[in-house]
Length: 250
Image 1 (cartoon, rainbow, N blue to C red):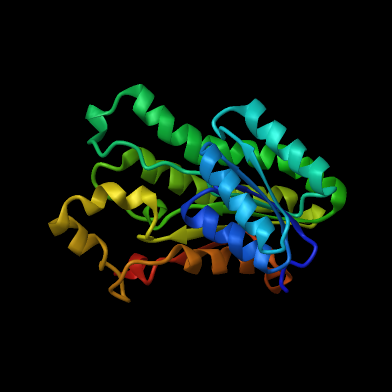
Image 2: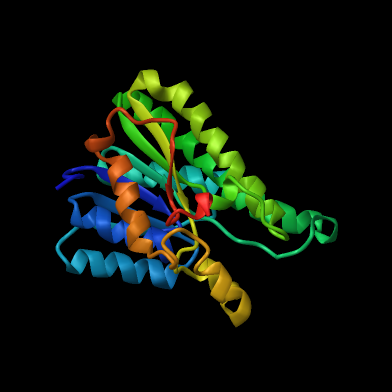
C-alpha cells in the first residue's frame, strides 16, 4: 500500500474529487480526516470508509475562515498523532459573469475559498510538518489556472494563483522535508460542472474539449493525488500535474 500508516486531511472531502481521494487514500492504508461543509455527506462517507475496515473521521470546516481551518488541522493532528498529508481540495465555481458585472462579494467568495483557503491550510499544517521533518501538501488547481475562459474570472484567477503559491510553498518548506505540489484537473464529472450540463449544446463541446475527447472521472484525479502524496513522488515538488485529458494542449 502506497500510504500505509500515513495520516491525511482532505478539505472538500465529502464529494467529487475529494470523496474519490478519501476512498483511494484509505484503500492505500492512510487514516483519513474528511473536512467539508456538507455534514450529512461527510459523515456518511466516513462511516462507509470505516465499514470497509479503514480509519476515517469527519469534521465540518469552512476553509475561508482561519479559525475553522486551524481547528480542523489541530483536530486531525491530535486524532491521528501526526499529519503527513494535506490535500487542499475545497473549491467553488462561482457565478459565470463578465468581470464588470461581478460584485465584490461574488469575487471574494470564490477567491476566499479557492485561494485563501489553501493559504490557510498551508499556514496551519506547515508548522506541524516542519516539526515532524516531513509532509506532503497537494493543492487542487485547474486547467483554467493556465488558460482563460470567458465569464470565469475569479475562478481562473484563484486557480492560477494556486500554481504560483504551490511553487512558493515548495521553496519555503522543502528544507524541512515537506513537498508541495498541485493537480490541475480538466473537466471532471463532479458537482462543480453541473451548471454546464444544463446547456446541452455547450456541454457537448465542453465535455469533449481535450485530446482524449471525454470527460474525466474523479477517481482519475485521485490516482494523481495519491501518487504525489506517496514516496513514489519523493523528488517531486513545486509542480502542477495536469489531469486534464490533454485539455491544456487542445
